Amino acid sequence: MAAGHRASMHPGPCKGAALPAIIAPSFARIFFRNAVNLGMALFEADLTMQVRDGDEVALDLPGCTLIAAATSYALPPLPEFVQQIQREGGIVAFYRR
Image (cartoon, rainbow, N blue to C red; front, side, top):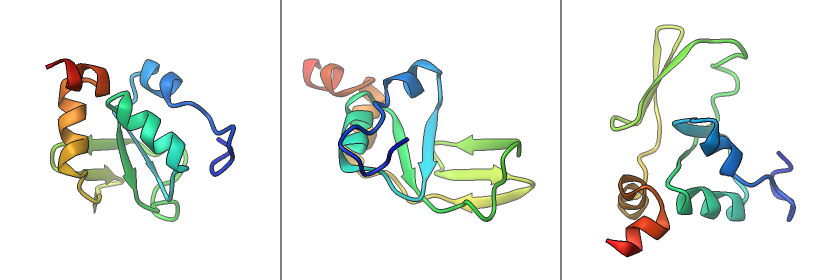
């Protein structure tokens, strides 16, 4: 995704693909901000050694928990303002309410 680069990927296609959340070790600040503005959930968590490509996973978004291979991983809770923007469906809807 070219993380950390000025030309990092826009999160719009991820939202369009109906991804409920993105979990990664880190995010470029502009990617994080754009994703929050779109109402997406982002979790900074390095699970690269625990979750493998092809693993079936389940996400408990309200509980901030990822379940993979019968193991639960606690994800850092989203800040309250991010949760509010998410509930509204993005920053535009948040400010329109």
